[in-house]
Amino acid sequence: MACWGCDMTIASQIIDAYRKKGLRIATAESCTGGMVSAALTDIAGSSDVFERGFVTYSNAAKTQMLGVSPATLFAHGAVSEPVAQEMATGALQASEADVAVSITGIAGPGGSEFKPEGRVCFGIARHGVPVRVETVEFGPLGRAEVRQAATAHALVLLMADIA
Image (cartoon, rainbow, N blue to C red; front, side):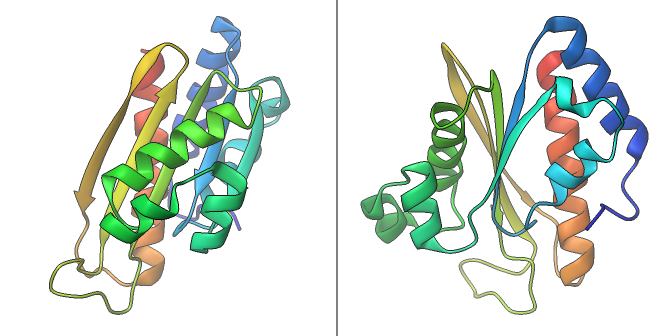
């Protein structure tokens, strides 16, 4: 599914900027379910830049496909910066990409007192550079809106990483 409402201009800018630097991107997505990958691959010529995407919705998928530690999942839960860090690192290691972005969050409906709806954790990994992680509280916007906001934010992170 395309990222309806996302600014496709940024996806085009990402593809152009990464192409100019000869860099390739991998994604590791949970709550966005592949929307970042879709936004990037909506751009003609994205195969020059987009290496692969991992949709790891379940904890088992995070562990099996990206090498996220079960101990990290147990200690912090799937929606946490440590898991976002391990997802980004795992995507980088399991691909031929130069940069990986990860997204894990609670799109809703629901959540808890400790992990409210709209909380999304992101990671950006690059070879030889410490993984950067951050959490954004989008709030209870509704499932589709949280997913769209998380996709847009991941694209902004990719653009900022190349700038």
